[in-house]
Amino acid sequence: MKKVYLVAFLLISISAFAQKSELRSVVAKKSDAIESKIIAWRRDFHEHPELGNTEVRTAGIIAKHLESLGIAVKTGVAKTGVVGVLKGGKPGPVVALRADMDGLPVTERVDIPFASKVKTQYNGQEVGVMHACGHDSHVAILMGVAEVLASMQKDIPGTVKFIFQPAEEGVPEGEEGGAALMIKEGVLENPKVEAIFGLHINAQTEVGNVTYRPGGTMAAVNDMKITVTGRQAHGAYPWSSVDPVVISAQIVNNLQTIVSRNLNVTENPGVVTIGAINGGVRSNIIPEKVEMLGTVRNFSKEDEAMFIERIKTIVTKTAEAGGAKAEVKIPYSNHYPVTFNDIALTEKMLPSMRTTAGADHVMLKPPVTGAEDFSFFQEKVPGLFVFLGGMPKGKDPLKTASHHTPDFFLDESGFVLGVKLLANLTLDYMGMKK
Image (cartoon, rainbow, N blue to C red; front, side, top):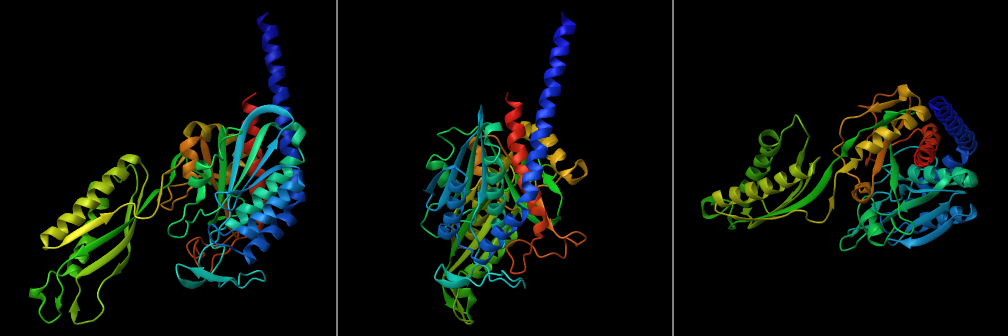
């Protein structure tokens, strides 16, 4: 009897493996067939970028495409977001796939035919607008995934939710947006999402490669505003002042001791950066007030709490030592949690990544001190966020323009791998739940 059960088990396993291989083969062929379409979509989005919460044109193109595939579409989610639901021909779990849509207030310098010439108003200033982080490629890739999976609908053992998210880079002052608002408006419900996958193109990773990290892969971020108030005086008589400029300089230096003396750097990295400091109007007037803006990055809730407590203590006590007063607002305008890849899910999906890209092209990566609001989705459901190579082969990553810069550039030949990766992660995850 045991032999009978063993034979039956082996036959079922062989059948499941053959079915999975067949689906991967279909995904590969269908993805390759639409590669030129994916690149064309990306170029169009690149030429016509839109800032967070204003992605009206982008959303319209996405919605029209999803509707043409027979996918149920909801628009206006979190202002300009688009959500498509594809119900497979077989029962199974609900898997979400996410792409972010917004560009950045950056003026493009790249010499390409589809370079952005768009200008707009941002925080009261006229700025150029550019897809300087690759969100245009994320949208095009997910549109490709939708086309591939819609053509395989009868073979899909579950439901796919396509989430096209606005405002990952942040929203105008006083507005809500991004992943947090999509969740607030119920994007992970009806149908309820069981797992979510996302990717980010990387201009310092060679095309054809995929990198990942279990656990904390991108940092939590808190921005902060520090206000130091002293006593104004003539610059010739500093002893009559309580100088907020000198005290602010001391605060900037003292804050760096958090990383060097309070953080266990053998466990997690951390960053405290002051990015703006403003005070005074003349060379011979010691001002009454100095304002500073900064960012704080951590990889655990414990480190985040420690950093916030130490920042408040250092700022207020340094000011007191100089006879001034100081106020710290942290977070000041935004907070993203750690982008935390569910460890069990990451381990489970690693074979899928290796089979899709090739084992030699899937690599463990160090933590990234940048932040991602994909983290809000991961707080609600298990999620996996990976990085897709976008650097031309043979280039030096140290000499390649980084994200958020005017010279940011992507090799489009890596996009089709992104389509295959997201499609296979979806189907393989569903296959494991049978």
